[in-house]
Image (cartoon, rainbow, N blue to C red):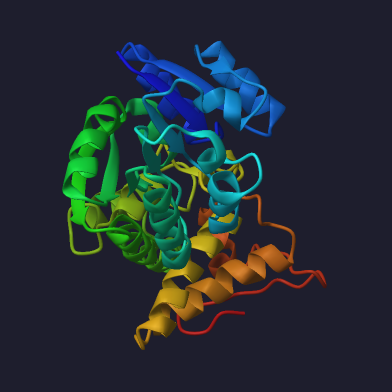
Length: 312
């Protein structure tokens, strides 16, 4: 079994490391958040005082961080991974970050003598806990193949995507589709409700018909229908509005660089921005339904409504 260094023990990193430990690996981890460290320790992670200690003696190092800036700091900054990691250690970044940052990490790792893969995930917290995540893995063929050995205990699917940064490209495009699906599901759900359809009956129809999507089956934005949905719990976060806004804007940034019009993505980004402007960045992203059903309280106390065709 391997010794794994892990940086980033939050909502995703915590359960992911728990599955590695169940598979018999030793995980040495670090996070700036003391609560995340304590939870990880309860699951068997050997928590450390910093990055250097976490990666000392590791066979492979994983990072799971919120943004590209964080990933750059952890790998490239003072006291970061590349200052002290041995050159024979495989580096795996499972964060969802911008293409430019991913390319910078690949280049810096190669210059240091390390193999590096970008391996973002899909499946959310529930997938992280169940060990059924889909990993999209970009990098050299040998690095991708070797990374698969360590990904397997956390994964339902490990899909090689091609060369450096293609894992991030796949994740950005996938999340673009997810959040547009979430917005359209919110509009369909609210309209069906107001037309007098029983919520469960409509869900039963849509989930086996052309309106089906992962968002509908997992994050249904009205309560009492799907047990895994945050709508049952006052939109306590499974995936925050802030992170959803970040991810869809990664797609918009890539679209500008490739001259690709993303009209729907612009609208959904504006909807998430409205929630954030009114202090709801910490709510689950399925709270976007509040902009459709009129329950969103704006900063001036107004009830705002929105459709996919025109965000408030």
